[in-house]
Picture (cartoon, one colour):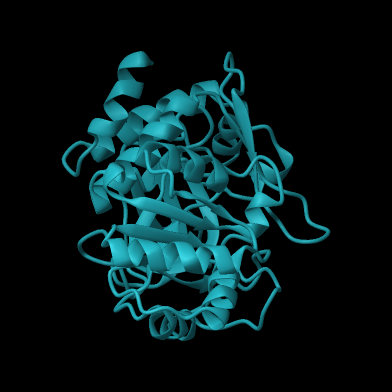
Length: 326
């Protein structure tokens, strides 16, 4: 097991399937909920021989089941925001270091050393509750910047505006990460010309504003901040890895994360590249829970492995972390 854990972040295109099948065999035997699910589908290590044979656990199981390997204890539990009247998802995380390694490596693959940046976070809906994996990640990344200017903002828009102007005038590389409705609210009240700023939205209108398409949101934000593109982060409570988009909603996954699409009417059938479908995510960092998750998102996957999220499935519960449609 220690050997497998160490090799997760050495995963590449050539050995992804090999390591994914090893993780499947481990979780089949060690994660009771996943074992029962696979058993009902008659999928076992004996007949799962390739990536497309692996069953993906519906994400709704995280709402009602404790998905954790036998013999493991949860070092922390992340909870989703959910919506009013819904049950939150709970992700029991046995090894916080796997999460830390995953989000640090994912960030630095896309943006270089975190120490080059000031990180500003506009995440009011997440700051108002406990056990958010996004807040955990943001706190850790802020600490790693080693910049006193990095910080969270709840509704201190005037202070945030002043901070951005100071950083712009200093020529400091800066990232502003925020939930979509808060970025829109701030940008409407305090538009600022900061062309070098990286504006990164995490999705989420949460009923705070009218629903907008991704294109409409990005157009408003590019105009307000004077930037060419809006960046995005794709992650969720049930995952320990993130994909990033540097514009136009096209996401790149780290090597240990892979998005595949399932047929809407046959969830065991994998869609070919370029054909729309429902999003399945392989997140090998989810070693002690479940690495194979069938989400409620719809999307497309392209030849180079990049993907986009085109909306939510009609019968999927609206989630707080990603409510935008194309």
